[in-house]
Image (tube, rainbow, N blue to C red; front, side, top):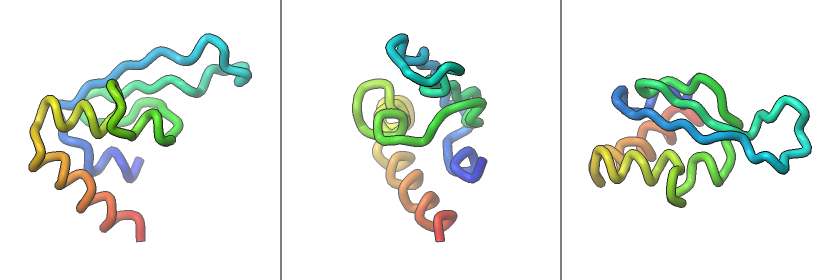
Length: 79
């Protein structure tokens, strides 16, 4: 939930779980609605700059300033 505090409010991401997942409840998908994480495992492919990742979406929708704010804010909350 702490990560939800730094995601811009208008960000929406939905990524289906990997069908080949060994996890029986398919916890490897991601759903962010209006900047709030509904479910996701915070890992590189969910947060990274790859297409569909949080960093990529924030950069494309909000620009470099908001992306920088995401990193600066995340650093403040991770200590």
